[in-house]
Length: 299
Ligand SMILES: Cc1cc2nc3c(=O)[nH]c(=O)nc-3n(C[C@H](O)[C@H](O)[C@H](O)COP(=O)(O)OP(=O)(O)OC[C@H]3O[C@@H](n4cnc5c(N)ncnc54)[C@H](O)[C@@H]3O)c2cc1C
Image 1 (spheres, protein in one colour):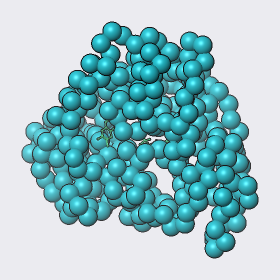
Image 2 (tube, rainbow, N blue to C red):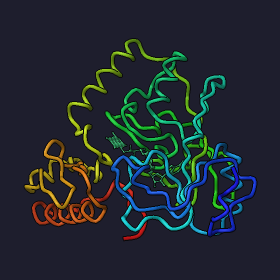
Image 3 (cartoon, rainbow, N blue to C red):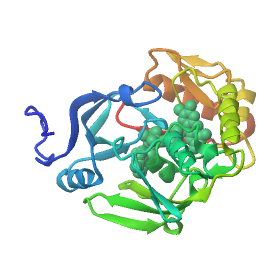
Image 4 (cartoon, rainbow, N blue to C red):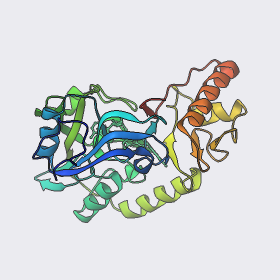
């Protein structure tokens, strides 16, 4: 689809294959339901279209998946925001499976199950995409995407694409060595036969998650990383902050490492709670909490 005629930026490729919107509210694309407008929002249909966009666009580029680990500030995001939803293919290739960076983890686990494959059941309840999971080394219940990742196809800022082995990506607890302007467009995972009773385990893990997290209210999951040997939720609860409210945002009384949007919360409300939690936890036990959620955009 050609960019709209009113586009204030001349630099989108004329042959861009994908949706383009101007001043798109990011609140519609984050699980927090919070976030000001992206100047330009693009959802390319293919890896090649994404690469062409990168080669043509000279301004800022931000890539998002399902927006499930994002706090987008109220002033929105300048430049182009690229949403990789359409890169959601999955193909068996011998003893590996090659999947798109925009594929949702829950769908990946279901498709692996249909192929008789397993090993990532623990990640099924994480509401994000494969690409972001590689960047953050997403994980749960002792399992991480790193456990099955063989290599990832990376797009760099000028639109070039290259496969890089997992060892080069330096995946560690909720982090990787990927640079800010390197993005995962495909990943090759080991295709391991599903363990006996994998489906039962999957259902058990999803039920456990539903019971322990405030899944009925908008959030971005855990706000802080767990410090070594400690649980961030416990430190916040012990600092007396479970249930604390600022504007429409609340530190969940159910799971104190989640901030939930009770309705109409702004990013400023959430950031004020983040600031409060950090201050009170340092004062209470001397631990400096590090953010797990990614904060983007302008105030
Ligand atoms: C209810 C709930 C529960 C959660 N539980 C867990 C959990 O158990 N474990 C866990 O690890 N996380 C959890 N999360 C957080 C989140 O789902 C994960 O971090 C997930 O990997 C983010 O994926 P996303 O596609 O939504 O990324 P986004 O939130 O859209 O983006 C996150 C970051 O990744 C970057 N990014 C996006 N796509 C790509 C790409 N293709 N290549 C490179 N970088 C990219 C973005 O620029 C941004 O910096 C939870 C979130 C919620 C809301």
